[in-house]
Amino acid sequence: MPVNKAARFRFEIIDECLRSSSRKWSKAELLKYVNRRLELHFGEGTNISASQLRYDIEHMQTECSAPIEMYKDGKSFYYRYEDPQFSIKSIPIAEKI
Image 1 (cartoon, rainbow, N blue to C red):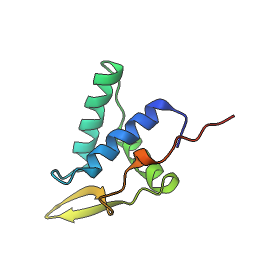
Image 2 (cartoon, one colour):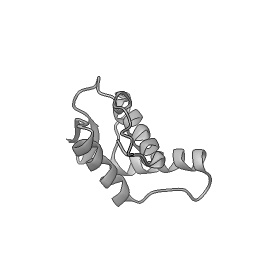
Image 3 (cartoon, rainbow, N blue to C red):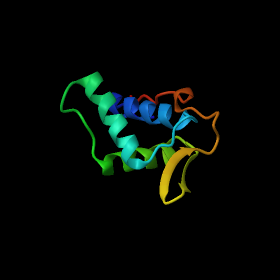
Image 4 (cartoon, one colour):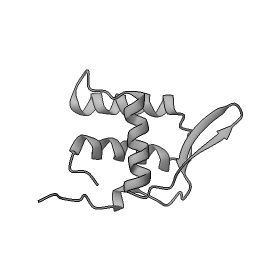
């Protein structure tokens, strides 16, 4: 995991969303929710772009082995964990010396 605390915080927000089985998370909904949480935590004007969200999801998949899948329901695409028991919080933060 990265040393960057904002990235770790974003990953934990995304993790929280993808673990929730009570809601479907489109890219737009994920971005809206992540930005709202970032503003609440770091202050107004703190947000990320859609491309940063895509990068974060890709990083979680490649570097953290997060089983994130995109699935289609009707005409829309949504994100979730393939394994509902997975959580990125169980992976320790790697420290650089």
